[in-house]
Length: 343
Image (cartoon, rainbow, N blue to C red; front, side, top):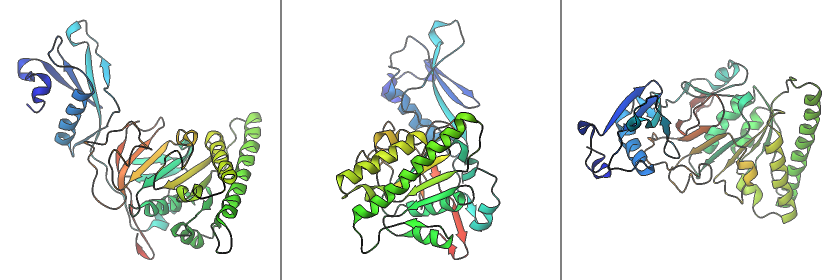
């Protein structure tokens, strides 16, 4: 009934289509010939109807385009279907009473994000966190730093000399940050020097892998807060060097366990090169979610219909590896408590 005029008044009552339930989703099976078009408009309409109806028992996984599957039958009228994958339940926030104790007890390479949703550090290439001011980027970053510090060496770049620097001070980790008596170009030059050393380390590790492909390296994560602030208003030669070094690390770092963790209000072509964006395989967008805010991290995504809970540190996450569904999921970042209270 809700599909209405879109399928010319045809319904399941007139045997115009059928629905088959599978463990990992459901199939909309049209009976051909039919008077409606099997296109993105129909697929998205069914998604919107089903996602709201299934909530909170299932979460439909949003597709970028119509998801056709072939059906095993000799009947030419029903040999194709529109598949709507789902996961059982909805995204649920982790509540962590004691962050220090929680992170100390985590298994190796295990990065929990939500209930029944975690990351394997060995499968991470690079991470991006995007969101408007006040959306909770620093909140999410502090959590990830608290987990990663037990599992990875850290290099922290903080152009705003803000919360990452305070966190690093508590954990005795050095930070590259601007100083009052130096120019911005001088500051970014120092960043470039550190990135250049990381590129050299990548080459050294590649040489080791050439002789011993199974060699296990210690993870190294280069954390950059407000990347946009780094790349704006700097001498062109220095900026070009910065972007070039970033690209080299993004392209070569995966096999040598060297990762980027980038935080910015946006990730357009002026912030990071396209080659870097293409190597990101953990994408986090928090705060206000609409077509405009998701256009850089999720250029093919129409977020309409995705049920995103209200609250601090909520948004979308996509993990592109062989352990997670490729689709974008609603995200609720953990609520965690420290010795100083809630964050």
